[in-house]
Image 1: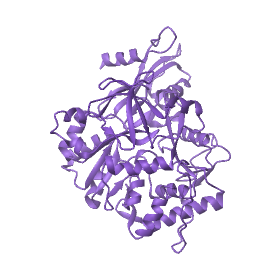
Image 2 (image 1 turned 45 degrees about the vertical axis):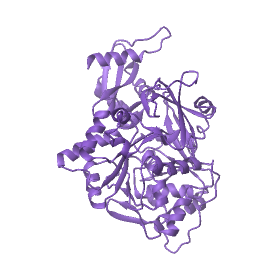
Image 3 (image 1 turned 45 degrees about the horizontal axis):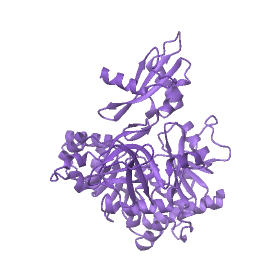
Image 4 (image 1 turned 180 degrees about the vertical axis):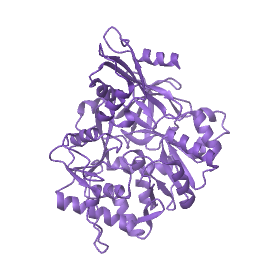
Length: 506
């Protein structure tokens, strides 16, 4: 079944219910929303020859039109390829080319210049160029699809630095959405899901269950995260729910303390996407009370590995309440998890190993990358690359990442991408990028730089260079200039020694 059918059915039953707001201003009812999605589908089909299975990319900030575009693509059985708007246009162009997207929607229609390597057969289309709604136009049901057809091509990365397209099917999305009210939080038509984090990622994936129940989606006027704005919208609209990275929660709590705001109007904040330190969640509970739920997931198993609902997060009565709060919760209802050694043998309770996941939300595979798929999906189990342990009650605690991914402000940053960008600078001979603990962002990017002999690059010059090559949020916040890098007998850089060096200096 096409996941877009949920919007069609909601619009039939509740056509006048508020569906999308920009701040406090109503932009669309559910009848309007469905008409827009159907109209966009017709526009793509009739004006651009788009059919089932074709890829359509969205490279834009959060906006009311984002949801309409998302459903318009799905409406005709095509595949949506959302791209993080924070990426550099060159990085976005690589993803669009890899996905072989026929069209990329952008805000202006002029984001990609001739030097960004956008494929010649990909058209850039302005969001505003889509014809307006015709209120009397009939709304035909969404196209029929197979459950295992790809609905959403989600680009993630590993330590290799090149993004991989995760094929998320209509079945994956449907099961993910149906699991949410069982394990994460109840949902109600009176809810106001707020999109403060990028809709290209987890925040956007969380739209489907709210569409099904007929809740009203809220796009902040800032089109991103602003603590004062969220507090204001919560007070005026009420029943706000939203997904947030731990660093967003820290900033919101800091604002609340400065302004004596106690969280009124916020129903639930779901946190994930990075480590939430125990002291931080304890502090947030002290200020806002029991408004927090936690999820742990990956693009390969979207939002659905483990969860901890509000009662579990806020519990103080269980003898191990503190240890549980420091965990990432219990396996969600749609999956089973286990801990395995390097040979994928099960490990006893309490022992640390790799987290493996199996269930109906695990991806179909990586887009046109059978080698990566076979290495990651083994006998039906997803190898997450994360290390953790299970306690006797089934709570999972993550202890480390087997990959070197840096998570800063809830966003994944892959060292290889930063290293490759810096190595193209004329004064850089060798480079190693690692993550270091940061009080506000969780982690920060630190680059160890070996200058080319006879040169003296400085931090400002390297930062300026990074801005021309990669997204600004990936650039190092600290540089350490060294004469050489520690290596093992095979010439591999020993990042463990670099981390130890940073620890000694802090």
